[in-house]
Image 1 (cartoon, rainbow, N blue to C red):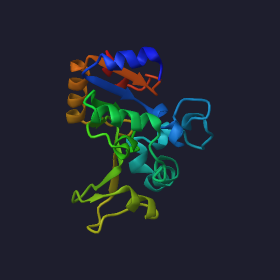
Image 2 (tube, rainbow, N blue to C red):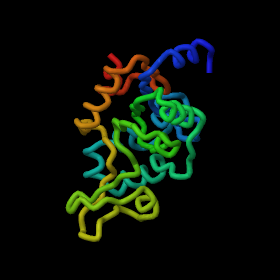
Image 3 (spheres, one colour):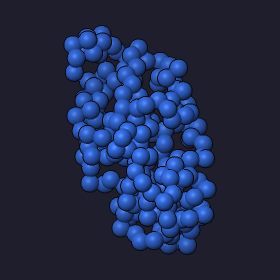
Image 4 (cartoon, rainbow, N blue to C red):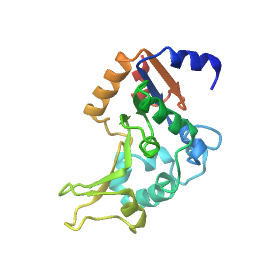
Length: 199
């Protein structure tokens, strides 16, 4: 950590961290837009299409094949950035993490106040009865996962074409607007509407 950043942190009482996929690359999870990112890999169907609301319902089995292969990184561990943020929260310096990531690594590192703008792979729900399933269930299931009631199970992640959760957005904006220091890292700030939050 640079001396300048350390001085800013030392003089702050209400830090909020706003991050994206770049925060988790050190944990071995690829980002989206870099040279090695998901969007620059070759697929018959672009990842942006495969991760869309429409594709989920029209090509559910193909969606889940891609989702299990590329989005479920359940063996990955928090890195130094995740751990430092949890340490700052425990010390009473950091009031919230606002993340565009769906990997749950901030919580795995010990962070308590995490606003997941795009949801989490660790929460999956039956669209019929609402029963929840964890990520390990999704990883070990085959084909299209169905609930015991017969309903389709959907990851609690925001797909392209879906709105962000209003409650999460409100909490994130409240945290950002009331902080005395906002640290932005690991994001290209090209994904909207989340990128507009820092304004």
